[in-house]
Amino acid sequence: MRNSDDRRMSADMRSFEVGVASRRVFLKTLALGAAVLAAPALFSPRALAAEAGGRKVLIVYFSHSGNTRRLAGFIHERVGGDLVELKTVKPYPEDYDAVVDEAKKEQEANARPAIATELPPLDGYDTVFIGYPNWWGTLPMPFFTLLEKYDLGNRTVIPFCTHEGSRFGRSERDLKALCPQARMLKGFEVRGSRVSGAAADVNEWLSGLGFKTAG
Image (cartoon, rainbow, N blue to C red; front, side):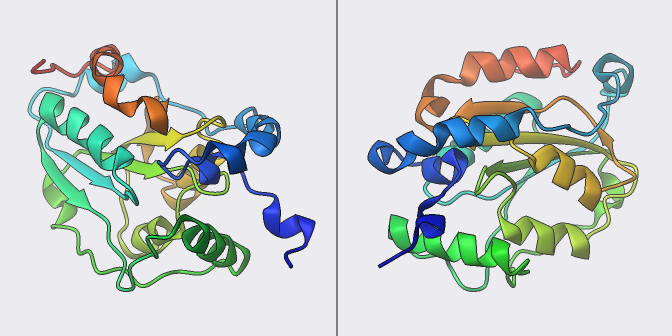
């Protein structure tokens, strides 16, 4: 039998981009507390977005059940650029409980899961979108592997996140620590259960950052 600590999951991990409401309800309150933690200072979106003309965009995302993939697709449709899905050498289990347990163990061990994805040469990119489901309050551990392997330097980094209550949690802070020289713009977060209806909000967010959108 699992002890109580094993059941104390963040609401973001509970969302996992899937609707398993019965197991995530009691921890939403705890997860919401994480959302108000200090986040990294953001650069002025208008000042940085003034560079939007002609900049090449890379969109890198990790998705387990599809919600973050769909959100990445909305962004790609509107700003173009190259779209890359982050995949691990060993795929995560499809079973919800199994992947919850594995993600928790990875985070507790500060693991760096082996990744199968290779990024294209970064020299041609000025802006990198980073997309992920909020697992246990932050980015899935494969992103730690990726961003320790590839130095994003002083590029503009823009996070987007799916969750089921705690928004970005501490993921923005962790992302800034992984990319200390990057210029971070305001990210976009949405509940996994609402991604399908988020296209208009995505367009408004991108417009607010100064991107000329196609939609």
